Image 1 (tube, rainbow, N blue to C red):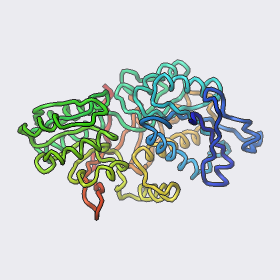
Image 2: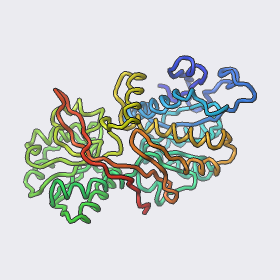
Image 3: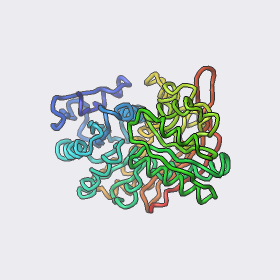
Length: 407
C-alpha cells in the first residue's frame, strides 16, 4: 500500500502526467535530492506543499479525485510560479485521525513542507488542528466541512476553501419551504456531519415558516432503511430532507423509491445524495430529487466548461465535486505564492496572501471571509432529471455569496 507520494516536477512538465515515487516506509522521507531530480539551478526556489488525503479505505475515491484535481491545475502552470517550483508531497491518512497526525508530523519534520492542504474527514482535520496551530503551519483545508474548524477551533493558520456543514444545510431551508411545502421530515446519517447539516437545514427551514414533523437518524453504514421508511410513509408531511453520502446515499435513495415514497413525498437533500459518482449506481430512483451544492457538473459557465473539458481529457472520466475542490485549492495556493514571489519564509505572510485570493472558479466567484477564514461562495439548488437512459442534474436556482456566520 502506497502511503506517501512525491511528485517530480520536471517529469510532470515533460510528460503531462504525475510521476509517483514510493517507498516502503511512509514515515520516512520520500524525496531524493531536489536538485538532482528536477535539475533546479541555484537561482530557482522550490516550495513544498504537503497534502493529507485518504488513498486507502472508505474515502479513497474522494482522496484520488481531490489529488487529481490539484495535479490538473498544477500541470496547467507547469508546476511553477515565477521562478519558484512547486513540489507536492502526498500522504495517506487512511481517514484515521491518529494516522493523519503522524503523517503531518512526518511532512513537517522530514519533508520540511512550507504549506499543508487536504483532509477529507472532519475528524482528521480536528486531530491535526493543534499541531498545525502550534507550529504556525499554513493549512488550507480543501474538503473537511465540520463547522468548528472555522468556529470554535479557528486558528490563525487555518483557512478553508471547501464548504461548511452550515452552508450545505442552510442553503436549502428557505427554498424547500417555498417550493416543496410547509412540513418536512428529517432523515440523516447519525454522525457529526449528518447532524450538523440537518441542524442547519432545520434552522433555515423553520425560520422561513416551516415545521419539522419528525426526525430520524439511522447509523452510518446502514444497509436496511425499511423501518425508517415505513415510519416516514405514515407521517403527514410535504417532503423529506435526507442527508446521506456514499453507499448510504445509494441505498437510501433506492429504497426510498422501493417503499413507494418517491411519488408521494419529494426528496430534498445535499449534493452528496445524488453526487456525480453515485447516480449511475442509484439509477432512475434519483430522478426528481432536489439538492443543494456549491458545484455541479452541469454548471453552464465558461470556467466550468473549460474545467470539465480539461479534466475529462486528462483522466477520461467526469470530475466530481472533490475534483473541483482539489483544483481550486491548487489555484488558491498558486495565486498566494505568486503574490509572495515564492517567499514562504514567513507563515503569517503566507496566510495573509491566501486570505486575499479571489477569482471566478468553475463553481462561481469565490473569496475568503477575513474573520472566519472560510470561503464565501454561491450555492446551487439542483434537480435530478432523466437524460436519455441516465440521470443528470440541472441547476434550478443560484443562491449567491453564501457566507458562514462563524458562530
